[in-house]
Structure formats: C-alpha cells, structure tokens
View 1: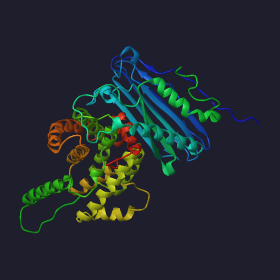
View 2 (view 1 turned 60 degrees about the vertical axis):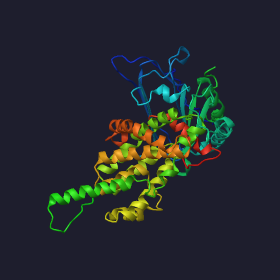
View 3 (view 1 turned 90 degrees about the vertical axis):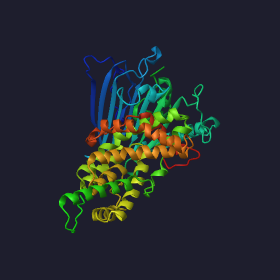
Length: 233
Length: 245
C-alpha cells in the first residue's frame, strides 16, 4: 500500500490594496489537526500597500500528538518603491488549542498607524516580520536544530565588539548599519516544550525566504517537497 | 474586598475618610521600589536592545520606553483589569493560564512568573487582613497548575485591598515605566537625574497609553511591538548579562 500523499493547497500571494471607505480586508482560517497528523501552513508573505487595512485570524485545534508548522509573515509594502510600513492596520491572530479547549498558544500582533510610535519607527530598517510555529512530537528534532542554529547565529553577532556599549553612550546618531540583516529569537511553549515559535525581523524578503528554505528543508519527507524551494527567486 | 472596621465611636464618614487615607499608604507601599518583589532583576528587553544596537542613546531609549509602555497596555492591562474588577481565586487561576498561553516570548513569560511569585509571597506576608492571599499561595504553590503570572496577581491583590480598577491599571503602567527606567540607569544609558527628567516627561505618554488600553476583556489582548518581542527574545543569547530578562 502506497504511503498517504500529503494534501496540498496552493494559494496566490496576499497583496492588500488601499482601504476604501475605511473598510478592512479580513481572512479567517480554522483547522483541526488529527492525531499523528501534520498540518503545514507555509504561505508567501502578506504585503499591505499604503493605507491598507488587513486582519487575519487562524485557529488551530490540535492533540498532543498532532504536528503543526505555521509560517506567518508580513512585508513593509512595496519597499522597492519607497513604500515602507505605510499601511493603516495589520492584525494577525494565531490561536492554538490543545485537546479541546486548553489554550496552548494565543498570539495576536497588531501594527496600527495610530500607535504612539509609528510602525516605520518601530521597525527601523527592517522590512519583514515573520513568525514560524513548530509544534508536535514528530518535529522535535527540527525544533532542537533550529533553536541551536538561531542561538549560534545570534550569539556570533552579539559577541562582536561594536555591540558592547556598557560604558559607551553615544549622543550622536549611529553612522551606517551595525545591526544584523536578519535577527531571530526562539521561544518554546506548552507542556514539555511541545512547541516553539521563532520570531524573525529582516531587512530583505529574500533573506527570510533563504532562512525558511534552509531550516524547513527537513519537512520534505513529510510534505513531498521542500518548502519555499521555488519561491522568492 | 477588605473593609476596615473601627470601634471608636467616630462617624461612618470619618471612617470612610480614614479608610481612603490608609488606601493611599497601601498604594505608596505597593509602588515603592523598596518592596522586595525582585522587579529590578528585569530590564523589559532593554539589555538585549542595547546589545543588538537598537538602543544606543537617550533618544532611542525614549522611543523604546514608549513602545514598552504601549505593549504593556495592549498585552497586560486586560489581565490586570479583569483580575481586579472581580477579585476571585477561581477567575484568577483561569486568567493566569490564559496569560501563560498569551506570553509567547519565553524570556518575558519566565520574568512574569518570577515577579508574580515574588509579589504574592510578599503580599501574603504583609496583607494579613486578606487571608485569601496566604490560602491561595499555600494551595497552589508547587501544584504545577498555575504559573503565578505578574499582571493577574497584581490585579487580584489590588482588588482585594480595595483599589478601583482604574487606579490599579495606572499603578501597573507606572511600575513598568519605573522598572525600565531603573534598568536604563543601571545599564549606564542615562544618569539618575536624567532618568528622573525622562520619567516626568513620559508621564503624559504613560497616561495616554493607559487610557487607550484600559478596561478591555482579555480576548482583546494583543502585542503592538513585535520588534520588541524579537529583540527581547535575544536576551537568552547575550554573552554577558546584568539582568534576568
């Protein structure tokens, strides 16, 4: 008997145009992941154009032996044309419930132009925000590997001399970029660290595609193809 | 809720005034940095922000603090509010579990549990007129079923002590500002006098943030500073660190 083939749905990239009459585009996804099953949600990033409003909600119901990979990311707009974080509102909510109604992961990110700090000021030179959720027993090796590689990558940058400012306060603005082009951090969540979330900020979309392509390649046996192997090139 | 009772022949009005005056003394004690709750072990991601060069001068610092204040409002005030307005152990334990799932950043989640535990330990010893505090600590400590997150515990304690929810939420915002500015002085980003000037300048911003995010249900809790989240998560990768978070 042949191994079950993964069920795939390919969706076009999400581009959100300017809001008309203050209306907000919204998207809702709800999924139940069965026992010993795997769901991978691996889209291209959402791109919100100037004055756009977008809200999405993704709700996942899992068991302790379900497996889940979710990539959720947004770019600053048509940044090559100088449009950087000029949308009005972006809200992304990801909720994961375990065994019915036990809250496992409840995250909601809101980027709103009405905030005290403008989105562009908060993001600085970073043009992409991404989040990768990896959860479930089959993906434990992937979690460990990713955690170790992110730690190595960030530690290398944090040990370099130009980041040591403990007795060095500059009153003039810094000259030229001294920050990493991609910054990432990992957090585990859930009982016995069942899941992990990686948060990423990057200066280019391509660098995030490369990061995802490199780190998610171990999903190929599960998915039949390596995620993002054709994307972003 | 604690009701002070007097047996001295004075009028109800005089008792009410004394009650309200004693509440002020309680408020000052709760906000005093001398209270041993371990708040000064945490920098709200500032140490990581400095080492990743997000914050290198007082201008960056001011912007950073504004983002911390807004994120405290959007993510945590709903938990403070809900715990305070109907102080109840069962409701509190649900809020605590919800916040455990909502604090997806491991560094800030551990900081929250650590600060909340310390606050409850102090409150259970100090506020003997609220026996529920010691009872709940005895019941849940070591059970593994609650995490003692800071925001709901703070709200619960203030609710039991008789503070209204507006005052409680304002106190919570004040403490966030106090702690991150204190961390900034210990990280040599600003001197003590400069820190005091900054705190005074930011009071209006903190009040605006509080008014914007106050009195919301917990299902509206959200984070508005994802860049802060990425940076704070890097705290665990710092080679040398002064703070726990």
